[in-house]
Length: 258
Ligand SMILES: NC(=O)c1ccc[n+]([C@@H]2O[C@H](COP(=O)([O-])OP(=O)(O)OC[C@H]3O[C@@H](n4cnc5c(N)ncnc54)[C@H](O)[C@@H]3O)[C@@H](O)[C@H]2O)c1
Image (cartoon, rainbow, N blue to C red; front, side, top):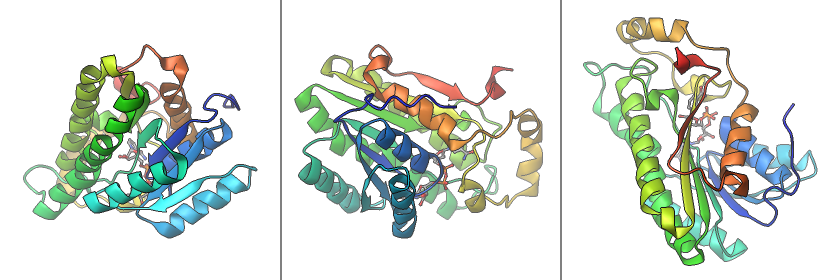
């Protein structure tokens, strides 16, 4: 059972992308339960409404704003709306992400490569560059990026997803290092398999590719619940993790330990 600390994020404003489903929804719920003013962002407006209903069902609330992280104009609007309504952004959770149909390098098409990079990498960069100036000004901020075990190993997904999550790891370390004296921390979580809706957008399209991934997939731990990832995100975003920055942490039940 998760330990809910109702005051952990009291008064902090948290912007979370991908909040309409899976890990993003679980993080929105957890931070709202722990006192944060949460703004959930997602490209899927109906899914965001479901997240809001789930959070209201436990007596908490969440602000929502629809936006596509692949569009800079959307990101600009989302960040401006959050600051306009809540004054600042203390916590940024870059959670939105998609998979790549497990396509290997010789089968990947331009559309898949470009889309995966645009959502998983460029989206994270776009949010960070708009949110960081306010954090620098206030000398305070915590960014948590959801990468993947595919961010530090080559056999978990297709080439586009793997490269995109390696890039998220690099982005995390760059920000963790560069802004360490600005009161800003940036960390990445690398989940293994988590029971979410991402599987429905990642039906394997390459039998050849999937066969090559088999030894790694066969060694996977059990599927985690999204809430188990939210626990780590909440801690990394909190003052308790004041000395943790630039860290890339597996949350995979030991999958990558072997
Ligand atoms: N589920 C897993 O097994 C697993 C494992 C490792 C890492 N991850 C990562 O966790 C993160 C969350 O994924 P999930 O498993 O909760 O999947 P999910 O599909 O349940 O949720 C992802 C959410 O992101 C949103 N989204 C997609 N594209 C977007 C865009 N362009 N702009 C704004 N929102 C967008 C979707 O609408 C969806 O609500 C992703 O970055 C994913 O790569 C998931």
